[in-house]
Length: 482
Image 1 (tube, rainbow, N blue to C red):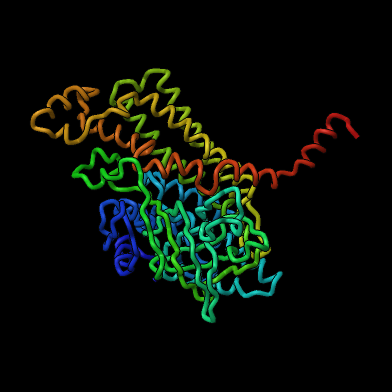
Image 2 (cartoon, rainbow, N blue to C red):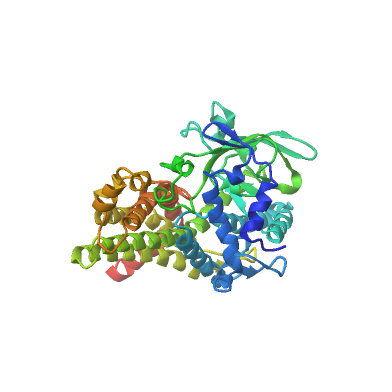
């Protein structure tokens, strides 16, 4: 069954035994927990749209590994077209969900691991590439959502992994067995870990020979013995526990972030893709980051489209849409959105074929894309707040609107145009609030800066990727310097 629909995806999760904690409480059935459901709805959308003839060309592709139709999220890129459609797919899903739909990292880590395992086998005579291909065929055949566990908690960040007072601050191998390895540690900021069937674990940075126990990459089921998912807080997340939909802003969809603990987790050799080869440890996050930074040019543009629509519609409801300064601000939001989308598309168009046989994005442009994503949504947020007004932080609740005693006052005094129901205006205000600093703010504001690494990481990558000598020679030639 190469493709699952949303219902099949949820039914499959119910058979798993994820060990999940939400606000200190062990959750026996996370699939049906009100805090978790909206994030699973977002993942389910990635499955359901694959069956829609309108979007089939973006969401599915013929696999180079199996020859069957598979989800694009599990695909190893075979052309420039693949990398462009990746961004278009991400924008579409951002538009459909208004939040982080969580599966982008699957294709980004798959394409990075495809290249790195091939490079290791050629240089070191290992067999990681064959292992990885067997794993990816299973992922494609079963349409798994594979998360990525890369960000170590890091402890004292001035010290390298082997220098930490507590060695578990970076995930590491604690025991080697005939059948496999045992690992311990934790990965933070884990997007959608409870919603995934597998996760690929990889180093967070380059390693030195003293860090060899930390140079490990592998795949593991997310309900494996010893894995604990601790649900991250979002502003307003407990609104999901209330009997309301208006206050949620986006009642159907949300992102999901966890602290993922590995408490002596066993991994069979067949699922190990890097083991103490420190020279390649930094190669995985470097390539993954470049690919993942391209993804943001699509998904954040899609969520920005939703934000622009909400701001524009609210301006109309308030009778302000024809005012020149309001129009200018909304057009500026459009300009910023299309700028980050252009960066994502260009990153794919300028991609190249690798020695491993796959195609990969232009790494320099991928980092430029993410630098723009780390800045421009904040300007969009400022413009959205400007147009929306102070009511964005002071809007009364759905319960007030429906109150027998005071509802009539809310209905009367929160109204904009006479013909527009007050509820419609409230829904838009809470949607904007949700995207900018509510339940989904992690998937828009925080993730825009820190997803796939903070701006400093992108600038560091650019410093390595830019050919400054060529630029200096251009200046010398034009200015007449020998």
